[in-house]
Length: 293
Image 1 (cartoon, rainbow, N blue to C red):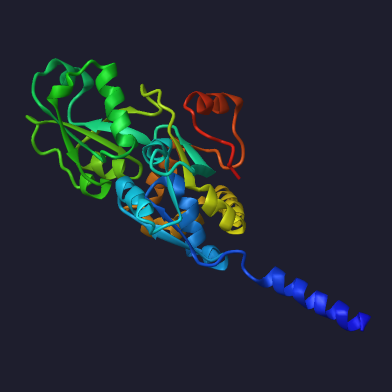
Image 2 (image 1 turned 90 degrees about the vertical axis):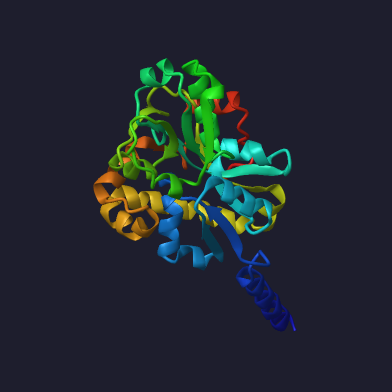
């Protein structure tokens, strides 16, 4: 009897270990951004399938938020600005996995210099994703360079549309608030960078994965495993960037390898550790860290 009892307990234990701790596939939505490429790599390698995670790729930051808000995903990737926009409506929303800090990856481009924009009285067509960190960058630019806000013609577009703009009318004043990898195409279309998070814009922009505390509890194993896979993907990038690029190339808006390499200089990975300086800046920005994995 003791032997039978032991075998029964052993089978129950093995059954508990093999059964999933969640009741459905975990859906995560993300946009095209160099800092989210570890997710694309993990997806293409089949790693996400192994932990029952589905990655949803969307074209804009606002679509990403709306998708999450509508309940079509359990977690989404974004900056602290998108988090602050949703937090009043979803109080238990928290960052759980850090990806990177923008260090030149968020950019303001134009067909004129800053002095020309300041010294003109003409209207300025500003292309951006309104419900995103793009708006904060534009706001900072307007304040810092004392440009009359009444001159700004806000044009809300997703980055895929914005990237098709061409500088074919020198009489028009155009501002474009964008981020890598879309800036490469815009540069080819005749626009130039005038500011970035590395150059003259002292804004903290941190990219993370966000979810509710309830979802974190119910999918804790998947999120913990995902964190390990993100670290594994970043390590693969460091060891063999060419192989990494070939895997994630379909997501990168026609970027070539040289452009991909250059774009890596515009972010700082913060998936594993945070400097004391960054911790302090995050505290000052009221960025919550308590639930980070």
